[in-house]
Amino acid sequence: MILILSTPNDDDTNIVMEHLAVLGEKCLRINDLDLFNGNIKMHYELSPEPKLFVESNYFEKTDLSSVKCVWFRKFGFFDKFKPYLQGETNIEMLEYLKLEYTTTLDLFFDFLKDKKWLNHYSNIKKINKISTLIASQKLGLSIPKTTITNTVDSLDLNESYITKSIKDGTVVNVKDEIFFFLTKEVKPKTMSRYKGFFPSLFQEKIEKEYELRIFHLNGKNYPMAIFSQRDAQTGVDYRHYNYSKPNRMIPYELPEEIDDKICSLMKNLGLDTGSLDIIKGKDGDYYFLEVNPSGQFRMTSLPCNYDLHYKVANHLKAMNT
Image 1 (tube, rainbow, N blue to C red):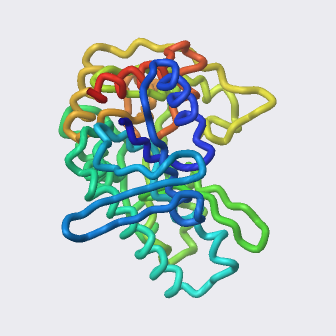
Image 2 (cartoon, helix red, strand yellow; image 1 turned 30 degrees about the vertical axis):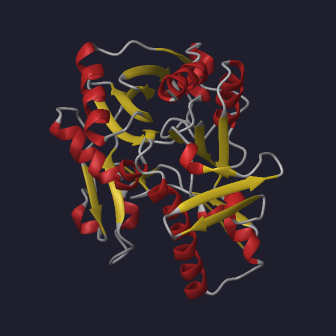
């Protein structure tokens, strides 16, 4: 049986499951949120030996020892659990509940650690933006000059930079206002009046020809070019979507050297799948930015006709033997 660890409303999971059904493969989906809102009942026994059972209105009681392979799609978003806390704002209580939440999820990981994994949880937990930038450099991939600092003294006042989250961007609600933590352009001159600020990540602004979004699956890359620089709204980050005038997106062929280095990077990181962001600079160089092990891939598959959901389903079928 195939176990899918996902999160509610993930369309990539839905489409892959449809393909698995057509392929005749039995699969079980557990959403992280469903473990804490009552939609899925779990029962974990410690003695005489660990046993883990789950059941819901959609499937009968299942012993997870029968699982042959696990797809770690998306799993463990505490923010989606917060609405169930009924307005709890005490920081210490939220930190305590988050620790209980993540420890419960770790029970699943530990119980299933010896199964076949499409993206093993232990490798995903080690991934962060900085370590992947360092790893990509060691393989010969170019990266933008990157600095993490809490003072403008470390920056060139005459240059332009982009800033982004050191770990993961998010969406924050404050007093009915929504704030998106995406990539932004900043000019140090406008910050020179501040003596210091919260430690932040700055990268040199690369004059780009276009952006590349690359989905990697089991040693093969599926690249897409995004002509985001043609629109001022999306020029710094294509995720500032212009829905009235969408960016042009087309299939792309990577230079063999870059393709090989990306495959080597993913192998070194222990990732079977992931969505990578790369900039093709006007200087002709390719600049690696980051990799998201659980990045959505529908946006790459559909415009480029890569049929990635079917490929993922077939890969899971091959693992389920």
